[in-house]
Image 1 (tube, rainbow, N blue to C red):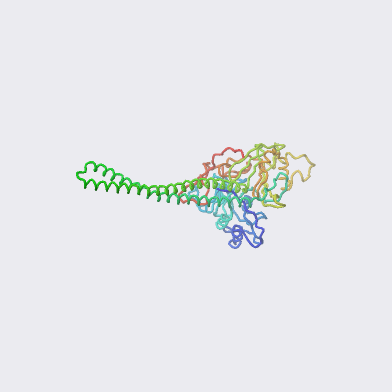
Image 2 (image 1 turned 120 degrees about the vertical axis):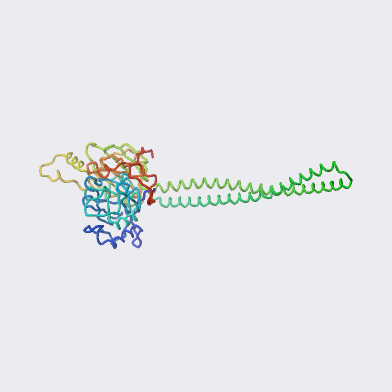
Length: 498
């Protein structure tokens, strides 16, 4: 199952397939998924890139899709109803199935399902009555769900916000510089792996051919050996008959026969030596071919490993910094790769929840543009106000919040990361993210997921009421109609050392 993020195309004369699919939506929708619903909106004034972020506003009952340049698509949704609310937090698309049926609710159809948690929260096509009405999932207009399904990739960040939020550009020293563009080196490694695979297949073919020729060379050897064995048997019979010959004439005939069979044996020895020599040559060719194939196979394995590593280096990473646990976690490709202690100063004061995303390269080879989306629970906002220095009555500062980028930068200012951890995560590819939050990891974070963060002061009915079960062992796009998938959270595995 591999995690990718696209960048906006800078070419005005070409659009990505995802961009074309999104642009087509503007022509397909004149109204939402239900009567009276808001219409789908689409950016049609510029080329659109691949989606890099989706934000669901529970307040507005709306989903907005963003590429590297801004929002590109909006549509109405219907989220979880009271008691079965869609949880607010940070998720990613961890599985896609064009045809999916609920394991919990009477095998209900959930077309173009994009799973967010293994306990059953997902984006999918469904009926939109104009208000929250689902059992925790996020329903979208059917045609919109299909088009979005075709446009997105596994790993797409999905933020479910209690209010209406949007990404804003941000700059901070803690937001690491991008790695040098190594796509050319990765392409070279992939090409080398393909060439090594071609040579391996050729070597395997050479072994097969040499084996066939060796087997064919064995036939005349066995034939000559059989003829010689018969000649030797005849010679033994003649020798035995000579002693009992009754007349000179019979004895002469036996002598002639003995001479002939001796001559035949000499000729057979010469032929046998020749075919055995040819067989040995074929055997030597076969042995050499096998050695060459063994070397080609080893070279292929090494080249394939190098290509996989090169491709992996291009994958985005996710970094999570938790004030609650005072730890930093790193995931790549839905797998944990590193964990380290960090220090969040003034640890009793909230920092909020902020998602920083490296959206594209900019400002030189190693530069990157970052944006941030900030979420805060009610408790965090109250606690922040309580911890502010007293001000004169009536001063607006005692009730107003600083601008979103300022609050996000202030959160990063309070984080101290050990140098060893900085060295391990130095250089992040576009699509990588840094999440700074008051929350701990959700139990939904586990096998086959990116980080899952749930705001603890917001309703969580969509997760609380679902029995967690192990995740399936495959993360595909389709499944047979009779193959059951379980909505469940996998057992969490310990973080390993990167």
